[in-house]
Image (cartoon, rainbow, N blue to C red; front, side, top):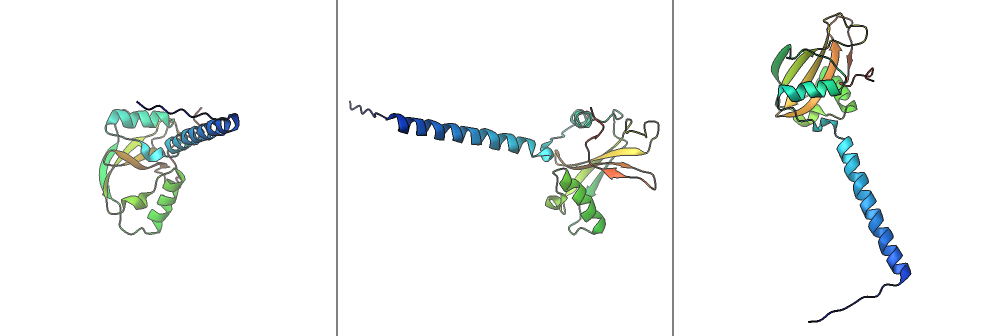
Length: 156
């Protein structure tokens, strides 16, 4: 049997320890950034998961969607789709990755939108392709309505 030992001097040992610590720190930072930079990472396989997401975003809804429909995201975006995709990009989604694909859109009535609590005109749309959330919005169905991202800015 052959055994070889290596003797490190203090400066070399200190340098090796610093390099190892820096690599570990960079790995932790990269993994944390990846985890929190991907809001589109939501898997929504069933109604329970969709309800949990809506609650997490600060919304109160009915237990079931008002509507569920299938749509095909167009191959070429017109001005309306381009504008809508800009809203999605602000939330970390990008519909251009799903051009030509069919997805499900789940529509929920929002009960706690500030200033509209007694109205039935605020809804949330969740766009799901496969089991993955690819886009979402909260909007008013009134003529002079509004559209915003999924997160409730009034959430405490």
